[in-house]
Image (cartoon, rainbow, N blue to C red; front, side, top):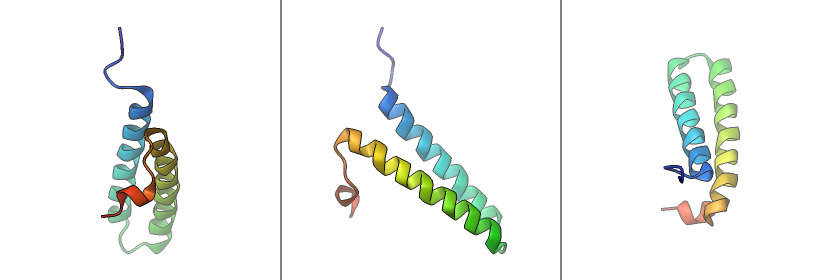
Amino acid sequence: MEPIISEKTAQVLDILEQIESVNKMIATHKGDSFMQNQYTYKKQQLIQQLTNKLKAFDINPSDLAA
């Protein structure tokens, strides 16, 4: 029996959920530049991971520009 979603898709969804959580933490720590910088750095790392995972779907960052 095939899984409902592929492992590649699950990994992308996981990263998106992590970015969503980090965004909430950035908003929570508004006014605390140290903590905001920490979470912003984490978000940048997650975006890089997402970019790499999207390549498996033949999607490049330039494809996402509106």
